[in-house]
Length: 168
Image (cartoon, rainbow, N blue to C red; front, side, top):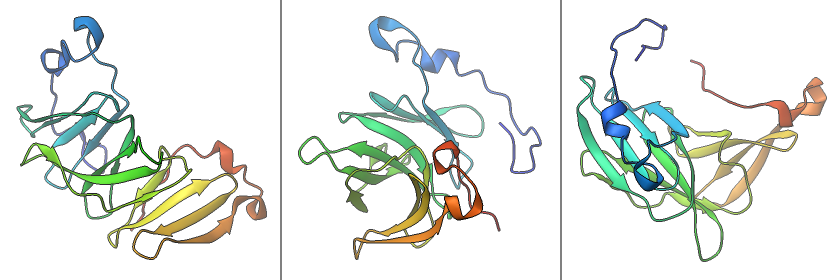
């Protein structure tokens, strides 16, 4: 576990916590591991569980998932969101992860047809995402999508971008 400068602040053995999380008693495959605003490690396999460990490595949340999920997204203010596929209209739904209450919160919104593995949410709950060859924002409350830039104008293949972050 490292801080933002890359300095080691803790070493945790999570193997016991991961046992029996996968299919047929196997260890789970993690698809996402992030740190929330309190410094807790929040992780998911995107399909069956979200688990959180505090700074000392103690399990503080173990949330069972029922929807086909994508990833964990940390917002600019340190809130962790989980995105999953709604099984009714196949929209991507975004919900905060409440590790203290050991549950998912209420949806902040949804969006049809996009790649949740390459996005972020700013402090105003504005979704920033790489979509094909454009960087776009999506406002959940107005349902407005705005193109910020076209990667091709900068000689960049947008499909090659694998991660984004907010720099201060």
